[in-house]
Length: 336
View (cartoon, one colour):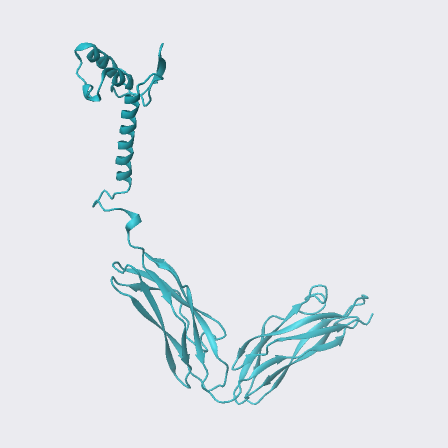
């Protein structure tokens, strides 16, 4: 417990357990040299008796209202020295005495660049992604590599990579990753896919992905798939098929395929209520064939309503590309 001692010159609270001379004793009796940290039990003389009494009192950080200027100066000096020692302790590594984190070299960083390759007619070509590591290379580290589709499709155009750790030895600055590109003789547009970096170990990423571009080397105009539009009178009951034509233009010397599906429009025709929804469905084109007809079932009713629209869209072309606007409109004409 703390206790309070009052005098005519001021008051002071003393708390703690260590027995040191108080600042009052320093101020009244001279230099701190007169009061060692562990003073003798029987100090002689006037100041010695005061020192002995002071030593029996718990030490407190502070001074009385009547402390002398010299005592305050000594306390300020001691506080400054304590702060300097504490700062030195916090900023120095206890293991080797070196200055810590502020002066350590930054961890290595990873980057990956875009790559372009010509497809080839047969077999596989190797597209090479280079992963560069810069910075402090003194230690080993690793990063994860994987691929994802763009306009180029895995299995058909390139061999995909699932996430895999690429390990770097101490001192190693780069690593090369091979992605197999599959050749063919089908005229097509440039295709691309992506390579991604993630999960760096003892390192950081400054570039997280790169693009792999596959250049076509086959003569002829690449096929293009286009979805046509259609309309139909609704009817009062049952279902009636609305017919849509998918057209393929360009070089038709090769077989191909594309998928179609339906989309409702807000405020117009809704899937399940006005027409039967169609999930992505594959339509195959043999060599030389330009057109294919697909069906969407329209549901009849006796409600008076406006003419309603919905969309039929194309996706996933094989041996060809999609028209800039790969949608067709279906118009349901009200007859009530």
